[in-house]
Image 1 (cartoon, one colour):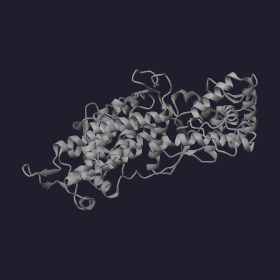
Image 2 (cartoon, one colour):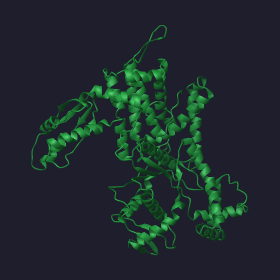
Image 3 (cartoon, helix red, strand yellow):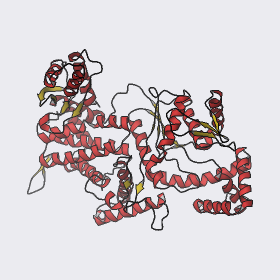
Image 4 (cartoon, helix red, strand yellow):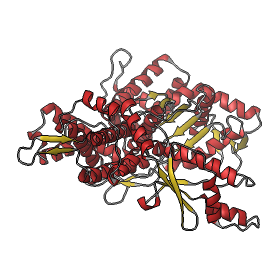
Length: 588
């Protein structure tokens, strides 16, 4: 697909360069028009250029600048005509034949990403639960947002590494292993039946806090583990495996695929990081700790504790170094809550200070997100005040979505298998979409009632809309072969204003994806899909796709170019769903 906005920027950038050849980096602004009477796109650069010239003591009317820009637009396949409005807005009208041709191309070749200048290595660090602890709603946000970012970059053709930076190392494993030895003394020969790892963790923590003898033994276990004693490595692996099985239940529900690479992976690399900072003279002693003060940062990184141990700062530096040098990443994204923003800012500053990367060459970003709130606008908790278990939340979603489907009478028309598919699609789709449709930077209120509402900007509404669009071809008795033949032979007419509006909306898809690449805000895609669904409804209400005999109900006429617009809408929506991790079903 072609990014029309980008193509227009290239055209207008060239015209402005000729019209204002004495200006260095003149401003360029091309955006879709908000109202049809102002054309399809607008170039609003003339006013900003006029201000720029004014600062250089050159007074030039913005309309005059706009006229010069228009005069220097080269011949092209996109623009039908331009007009100058108001103080110097340039309204751009696209050629209908150009838009029609792009829509035909979409139907014949599928929804393809714009051509890549360079395939990049993108590392996304997301989900990252802690071993021996339950996954909670904070992990849900990281998991959903990170997965969607991966899906976007994979669709665009980049080489994506999905990393799960689990908390699988540290002093807490000493108390867990000591407790394991007491509870299951024969753990080396018989696999211990730890059913509830969360309860096991709480038991070991209680003993650690109350029993000095146990605490000493726990510290000894940490030392034995860090020295890679085989029996202690086996105990550690047993505990990690129980957690992995629990995490996998969540990942299976949400269709998440990750490569686990926890803190333990970076243990040996941390020593190299400490050595490198010391050799470069960038380490300072502070009350027995070894710290690094990156320039421009208000707090230091503690790289070595006073007892000689390493910290999160050390492991995050080691992970970043490995991703830059071993993975040869072009773009590294950390998806964690916004509370860690300052920490990552300092880590990135330290990495730049030591010369690991130049931010103009390698992009390293923290994609932070707000907290999940309950309907009382307080931090999301159970009634008893505990953190909400993620599996409980997902199971509740399944129950509620089934209740909703039965309320709508879908159990009467769908087979049991179709009903289960619809239940899972709605439950997990609604949970994902509720998260992704909010600006990730903000906190958001978790409400099953709002999520499952089939009105407004929700997954329920979009999934039902998609199913309806897919059913139009069945109504017209058209199979895939007939639609393919129509796409090859039938020109898509865009004469009706609602046809034209829908056609342009469909072709904005690459622009939306480009914006998300730049700012990593996925709610833009949700807003676009909702706009597309409502634009389609306007089109369908005003333009007959299938005409029936009012008495017999028989199909008497199929307006094929409109059927093709239906198919193009379904194709774009399906790809949008795929990027968001939603699973549409044929019948709902």
